[in-house]
Length: 106
Image: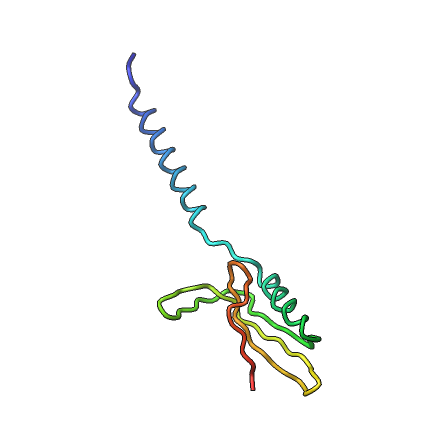
């Protein structure tokens, strides 16, 4: 039986292209939506009182800290307590929506 080198090379090229496409798809990072991350933060704040307002950046941004690089969402929450209005800013992990840091604005 005679081997057709053209067919063999075409098959090898198609296999390599397929493997590259699968690898590309697996290496892409998936993000939760900004709305889902904001909902997670709001749910945590609602346990302590009413929320008057909130915001979040719709696109994740890179955070570099102590040799770590992460994609995060930044946002804010305003609430009223018996002592008056309070404002907070937060950082949420863009892959999970988990709150990474919250700080009160003075």
